[in-house]
Image (tube, rainbow over all chains, first blue to last red):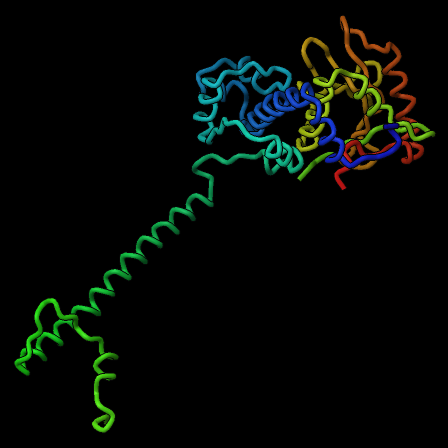
Length: 187
Length: 128
């Protein structure tokens, strides 16, 4: 196709991905670029030396990791870096459709990672989980509190009328009691 | 958010010289060049190891991409609008020399054309 007939980037990428060599390099370059740029972004205003000290690595090692042309990092090093910045690390195989989506949505925000302490959503989720747990407990307690007096009243009433129910008999609810009243006697 | 929009030089006849240059490279190199440019668009500041200014022409920058043992050096400049980087010519560095040799001077000529008329620059990634 002549270069002056324009294709959208997505169309072009989908066409390129038909080629096995392109696909292989696409995977590798996403790893190499992603890791390098994310480490650089995580470091922020700190120096490579400072991060090196925290990670137990030399400044030169951090410099290499930040270079997207390097690409020779080990999983051990990446885990070390994740621990240093207190962030998660996901290494997994995915279908190409996932990688395509990731590439198409690539932005500064999708690359930016916050450390555990600075993750507001995680704190909110923790609070939500606690609220949920508290709500369930409260509902259970309220159920017991409302049922207990009814059981107690029913027990006393049957005792007074000398018709004590056997434990197998179910206690009628107030609604059932009302339905059982013959029409003529109501009120 | 993307900090940069990468554009490429097009000739009067509408030839996208950078896209043609990329397509002339091995498939693996094409993927590396395209992916690097995607990532660069997301970064506020460039500079080494991603890019470097040329000594001969102060306004021209090289993007430093390595794939296997080859060093790809697309040349471009910042502007004319804020947040734009215009790729002007594709080159390869061998033994500290550009191939084609005249890549920096061609880049400078094309830069002047883009500054005169923006029709000489189109988006590299047509995201729609």
